[in-house]
Image 1 (cartoon, rainbow, N blue to C red):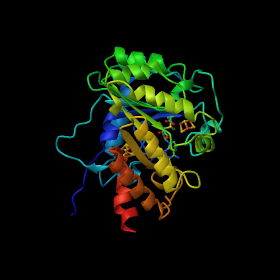
Image 2 (image 1 turned 45 degrees about the horizontal axis):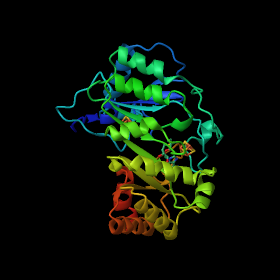
Image 3 (image 1 turned 90 degrees about the vertical axis):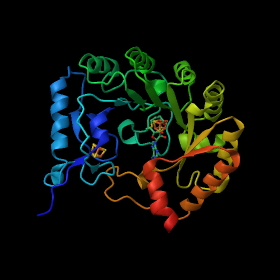
Image 4 (image 1 turned 60 degrees about the vertical axis):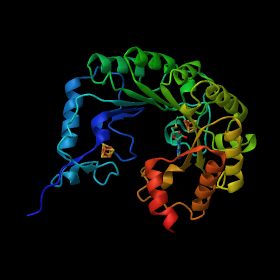
Length: 332
Ligand SMILES: C[S@@+](CC[C@H](N)C(=O)[O-])C[C@H]1O[C@@H](n2cnc3c(N)ncnc32)[C@H](O)[C@@H]1O
Ligand code: SF4
Ligand code: SF4
């Protein structure tokens, strides 16, 4: 008789992801275990989260995996003896709004925001984060000593609650932040966190000139973004800033554009650059089958990598993309 294997997922154990339309365990791109759908700011109960988490773990074995939304997930691994289900979350993803002050042609939020460009800060059109966060703290659902806060969006530039949310997390002892923004608007609180060595700040510039930026992002804000980057890297922790280059078909998928980007990064003192592909080649975002990246993307990656070595820039590649590059793109 074959042995019934048990599985574990560290995301399920540690992560709480607060999206605009649901509160769930992870942002793996898979339809993962979900705590609440269509949240509208109601009072939450600790027991409810715990029950959902336990239920999700109870399906992670060979007998029940067919009934679990986690089936086939990249993050699933065989359970070890010392894996224990934790009642608290160590990692919170805050992404409870979709409005943004730019309109990247590739943006994942387009289906919810219809690509609308907002310039004034306002409240989330779904639920407020601050009262939700306070409830989570009051009910001891967040691990105060280890908490890692990831803020995405939409864009923080147009979220009224951005700074109050960061301040609340700091007050409660959050250890580390990871903040994504299009970087069109300079944020003193981000500079403060970088100087305190408490955040990684990530932006996707995706190009090295104003014209291409306008085509990719549908706003004329290249110069603002570059000026803000210079301010963020000018202090004691330039290593806390990461600039992404997302390869987008028929926009920046050529070596000239990559060279221009890397030269600019080197000139303004950026230390970390992140090579990324359009998510449609990496994550299953309701598309059924995931298409393979075009074969010349391999050369773009190698060109990017070589330039990083030449300019002494640290090259970051997301784990899932690294696997795709090593196991598929470089083998073809
Ligand atoms: C939805 S954005 C929100 C945060 C912020 N507005 C920004 O653009 O950095 C979250 C992250 O997903 C990335 N992203 C959005 N659409 C993508 C796509 N189609 N492929 C790869 N990355 C994408 C963005 O560049 C950003 O780093
Ligand atoms: S196994 Fe995958 S889908 Fe399930 S919680 Fe973990 S990361 Fe999310
Ligand atoms: S800045 Fe971010 S949220 Fe805004 S359109 Fe671009 S990827 Fe989407």
